[in-house]
Image (cartoon, rainbow, N blue to C red; front, side):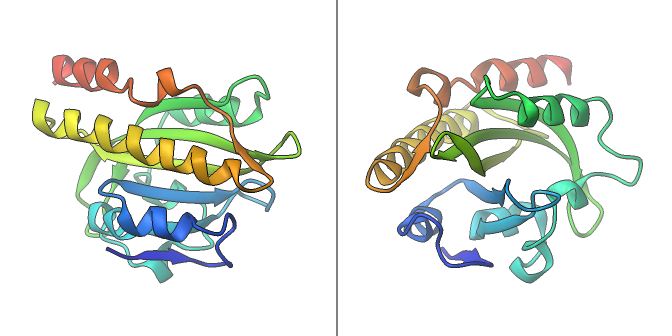
Length: 181
């Protein structure tokens, strides 16, 4: 696996986490205009079909279909603007580089420094054709990655603002997506 960053590893160890993760991870710089991606891992490029050079320093909305993602975009903006919310999950329509549509279960978590959001960690899971094994594996991997990230941020001046109870609770969204199919 590989990790790609457009800047120096912001947390000193984040690249190891990204490289070793079995799930799709992205990192966006909330302090820069349009919140561009500054880090992605190999699983992200596998899911989307885009190379690192095509993703980094761009807002992730390039993954949305031509007509946009619909009302979920407003909910995502509201989450980013709400200082009281530290994490959220969204089901968002996306397209791969080849134009193939997929439903993305996106988990976003804020990473703060000195009480201000500086980075947004994203975890993506293709729920277009979910099976129970894949969703369980995703939940376990996400939980493990976020615990590792929490340990990493404790050693720096950054903090991961989320509760461990919320980290692996994607089952409800995955189940609902399966019911709605």
